[in-house]
Length: 164
Image 1 (spheres, one colour):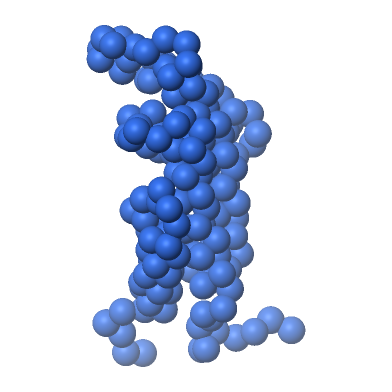
Image 2: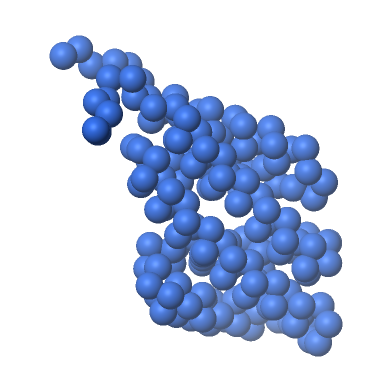
């Protein structure tokens, strides 16, 4: 059997990233980068695996966004942490609840994504109110997840035999 230069998974990834970038760019306050990354990470060899990975990433996105938002709200409304080393220490320590929640909910595959979403929110804070910023990062990531799952459900390998 001849090897092709690129496979179907590559094509699906390209389509998912493109659509994620386009959809995200239509939203005010969006950073399409997060949608594209989520699309890449959720694209799997088939719909079932993509759905499982996407579901785990969605749960992780919720966890990371909520905890990131809480941290930003603390800084915005209660106490602005001026000392950067102290802030980095607190940011790092607050990975503990992100990891714990992901593991406790029996989604250990979601730990990395939960941490990345949380860190993206608390480190890349950009002028927006805490809730708006966290919600926009949540939406950006969710767009990539949903697009990857949908692309994987519609673009199927025509050579793969369908189970009866």
